[in-house]
Amino acid sequence: MRNSVAPRALGIAAGVALVLLGTAASAACLKDNADGQTAEGTLTVTRAKDAAGRTERPYILHLAADACLDTQDPEDAVKATRTIHVYPSDEKAEPAFHRLVGKMVTVSGNPFAAHTAHHHAPIVMRVEDIKLRAKR
Image (cartoon, rainbow, N blue to C red; front, side, top):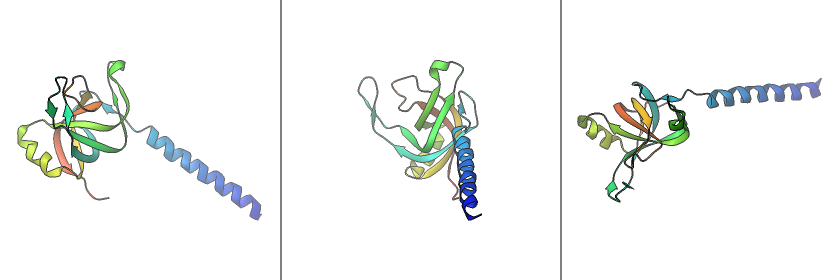
């Protein structure tokens, strides 16, 4: 009897692990050019260069897990990234971005695939709302 419990417990644990892994892998992708998409991560400011070599200071959201982007054009789709280039949709929101650098935040906005030398992550998001992430 004792020997039959261990394999059964192992089988149950393996099943639970597969379900959890499947859930994480099947998380919904962000939708290209759709308002109200959300992402969570640590907000940073980096130094980057544009195509002419000029320095830029983009806000980059560093994610704890991979994000993806579904697009109408399959060539623009992003399968997995841990960074999103975020920018405020209104210059009035710039102070909030500046104040939240280095903190865990939740952003809501309209994401799209990077397509210029001014985009410094595979996904770019025009942010309508940024908040300090609630403690879990």
